[in-house]
Length: 271
DNA sequence: CAGCGCCCCTGCCCGC
DNA sequence: TGCGGGCAGGGGCGCT
Image (cartoon, rainbow, N blue to C red; front, top):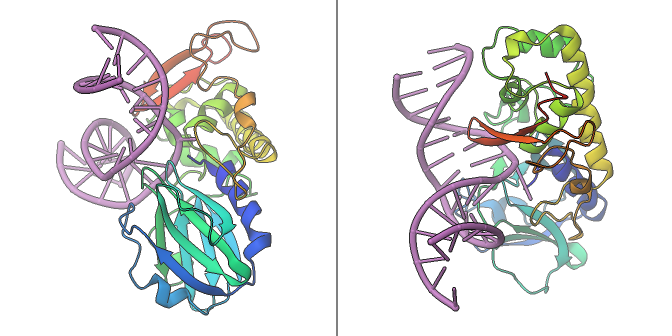
């Protein structure tokens, strides 16, 4: 399951191979994802040229002349480029087949993902219109973060994972960024100083950039557009390391639950 | 209205 | 070897 680096890795892996190609046909094997795949997706896509693919938050946006196809990978989704006649595996729910037998195959065991067709402008869509800044953009900066969390009584980790505050920081990278910034995940957001916001913004950008450079994190079954795993999991400093020594000070990493999500931190390094 | 918890679903791992 | 419980990277939604 993909966090932002995995979605970005997927995007970079597929764009050069499908941009400007026309859709030949569409195969939908299962419609019941998080929301049903629209029955008429085939009608909207066949014969149309894919103008571009972009990313907003963890949504992949496929730009067509008459609308946008939105794909979200949920917890377990992946997109791969295959040959049309590659054997179908369990949970291969949809194929978009382009010219030259280029086939984009959507695979998602848990079916928390989504494939949607939008005709309204992107910025008026209810899934996209309320999203906060992209973490790697200049719109995510220390003063803005401080402004948006300074009166919140939630924990800083929950705020980091709130897409209205900043998009794309999921459960793994929230713990990792807080470790780098030396801030305890449970700290109330309204107690985070402007100086700490600066550390945190830098940490979020650093950890996400790093993960993208490594091709994303593979915990279970993430694969990029070519079916290859990511390598960032070898660099995780706290996530999943409950009881193991902190890489900085040697203290044992602790695990706790925050809003039903596993949370890891070093009780010595982080305050 | 901020914030919490539920829930969608399959697979995997662990303990008995 | 089988079974039940718990856990997993997301995030919209309904309720308080």
